[in-house]
Structures are given as structure tokens and as C-alpha cells.
Image (cartoon, rainbow, N blue to C red; front, side):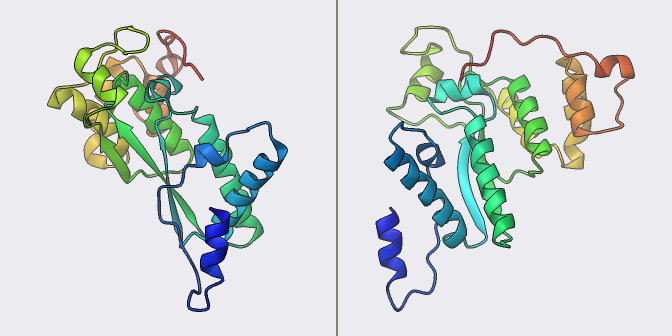
Length: 226
């Protein structure tokens, strides 16, 4: 990829070349144990961010829950944190004013409404107002689709719940747009139902969660897997 970038930039007719989306940062951030490869990966990330972003770089962390990401066969969300740290550091160092635009998906098999509420709180804390979002749509010949239709993960044979009805899907999707005032009453009511008043105070500071309620955070069922 670096060779292609350099060849394109060497053309006299080309002033700048931009990569709009489709960057697999999970590959360029993955430590291989081979210093030469890891050094090239670091060089790729730096050149991409410095020279090939037209203002907005779209990447796809997909979700913030490591449990859901594991079902997608995607890496931990911590990898996105690391990539964003590099992005922010290079922007500050070189006086760039670029944005990173993350893409997320709701209603993937294994994703719960509580997972989406946590996604809202986490992305808000990172100063994102999400716009690149999608509701899961079954696609032929994928593990996710087989899990969706059968209710079981094909590799582990463990049962996996999926949001399937319109109501279940909308209940998850609304958390993408927590900042829309029209969604606020419904989200607050849903978070009370989920006993996650701690997220109410994160999304809407000063809203109707009592000091005692703010301390409530029941333990999650199971543990996220990296």
C-alpha cells in the first residue's frame, strides 16, 4: 500500500491522494512480532494520517462491546482507542484539523440494548456524535447471518440472542442518537428499566437520577472477551 501511495503521489498530475474509507486499521495496528513488519505498519499509519486524509477519515470499529466484537470476529475496541490516540497526536504535531469518523452497527447477533446504551456513553465520552451507523442486515454466507437465523454460534454451538422485531431493533438504534432531544425521554425511561441510571448521568448530566440511583450499576452477565 505504501508503494502504491508513493507511486501515485509521484505522478506530476497528482497534487494529493486521499483515502476516504475502507482502512483496516485493525491490520495496521496488529503487532506481528516481526520488527520490520511492525515498523512498516507504523509508517503506514503515519503516512495515511499525515498525507492521505482529505479532512475526514472513516474507519469501522463496529462496536464498543468486546463480547459483540468477538461474535463479529473483530478485535477489541481498545485497538480503536490506540489508533485514535495516534490520529490525535499526529494532528496536533503537524497542525492538522482532521476528523476521524467511526462506523458502528446495532442489532448484531449477541448485541443487547444494554450494550447499545454503553456504546452511547463510551462514544459520547470520546466526543463523537455518530452519523455513520447501520442496523444489522443478514448477508448470505456470513457467520453473523448463520448465527442470526439459527440462534446458535456455528463454532461454539452456544445460543445467541438477536434483535429481530422492528421494536427490538429501534430500541437499540435509538442509542446512536442520544443527542437528539426527541429521543431523550424514551432513552431515560429505557435506562431506568435496565437499572442503568449511571448511564443516564453520563448521557444527560443533571437528569432525573437520584444520588442513590447514580451508584447503581448491576454486574454484567458474563464477561467481555478480548
